[in-house]
Length: 307
Ligand SMILES: Nc1nc2c(ncn2[C@@H]2O[C@H](COP(=O)(O)OP(=O)(O)OP(=O)(O)O)[C@@H](O)[C@H]2O)c(=O)[nH]1
Ligand SMILES: [Mg+2]
Ligand SMILES: [Zn+2]
Image 1 (tube, rainbow, N blue to C red):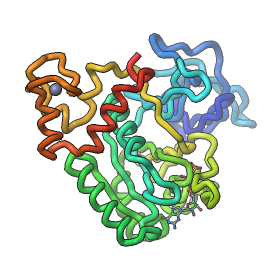
Image 2: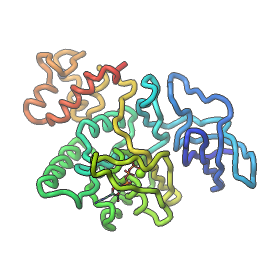
Image 3: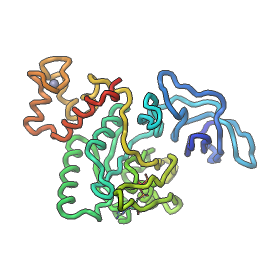
Image 4: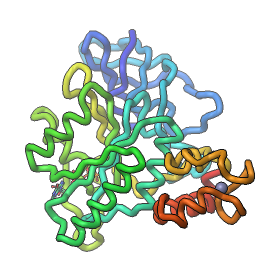
């Protein structure tokens, strides 16, 4: 029968079937997807075919994987040549960011957005922990939200424990399957726990010593808020190594650059030094944010990202 992978630990998978039964499954055989080298062949969100092994224990085996609509992948931290699929078959990627405790860098945000663009997955930014910001930081956050909104990304500023804020998050998630991603400690699990009383993900305080999260969530897990609304909690990530993006493609994944493509003098313009480059002109004129342009350059320079 067919089911959906709700949780994956790497050694077993929790599968929810159409009949709303859940089974803890292992894999049978090898699952190799052509042209994709990954450390995890099956990820949360995958639609699979499974056979029941034990009706009493609710165990089974996954025998096949159905074609993916999409997936979001990062470079494996252990084996750099390999990717690690964060989730499959998602409607949107929600990046939870915090200006403080811990601080999310713009480089990380832009890499995440580029990655989502490359997989054609709409991305949303949630700025959490606004209760911890001083006036200067609030102004900075406002500026960032205006920047990303102007590029076309929906942004929302919240405090996880504020009911009205959580209501706004609910509206963003309605009728979709969403991935919650971001650094450890930004509050992904805290937000999720507020969305539904039945969800009780472990959360933990950010280390005051390192100003970093302590990696409380260790496995990706999908929760259903209603029949049509699913949210995936994931372990915090430090970096998002970009996969399979070549030099020529990169600018297509920054929407404000994409809008100008084709207008540069040289068709193979890298937008770094060429005469008649409309991207450089737009940066000069302040129409493209310097931070976005610098992060473009940094991604371009990252040898590993366009192999
Ligand atoms: N002040 C404040 N604290 C928050 C807010 N949201 C979350 N926290 C706290 O931040 C800490 C980390 O939250 P978690 O939900 O565990 O973070 P996470 O993103 O799930 O972290 P990992 O599972 O490690 O990736 C906890 O102590 C939360 O109580 C918020 O809006 N304001
Ligand atoms: Mg967590
Ligand atoms: Zn150019």
